[in-house]
View 1 (cartoon, rainbow, N blue to C red):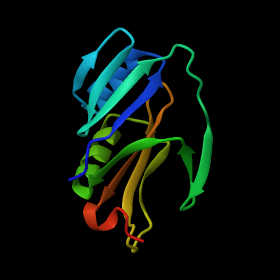
View 2 (tube, rainbow, N blue to C red):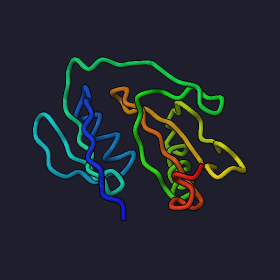
View 3 (cartoon, rainbow, N blue to C red):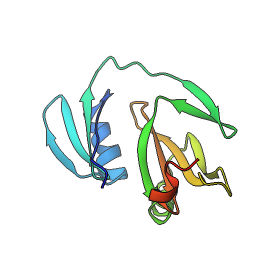
Length: 139
């Protein structure tokens, strides 16, 4: 069993973060204060901290022909869960940074991937594998 990770990022609006993570991505909210909010991010502890002076970056590296934003974070899902999330995001009119597609087709690393940004400019990647345990670190 994998241990849950803890990740904290800065946001420039807790209200917009609550809307994005709590409503759009349906991540349950945990503890909070007037400066931070905990979310259950697919079983992981994810915290947004208020930073009214947050700086945004626009750096990317080419991976499989796509400009991949760095830094970014996200979660690995089963392919069924990834397809459900993709469909939900499309239905809600979310703008993709990198459109949903299959990366590395017909290889050990074949995966669905998509990238979105939260309202503060943090980039998230969601990956989907047919066999998460067998493919996640396959070479």
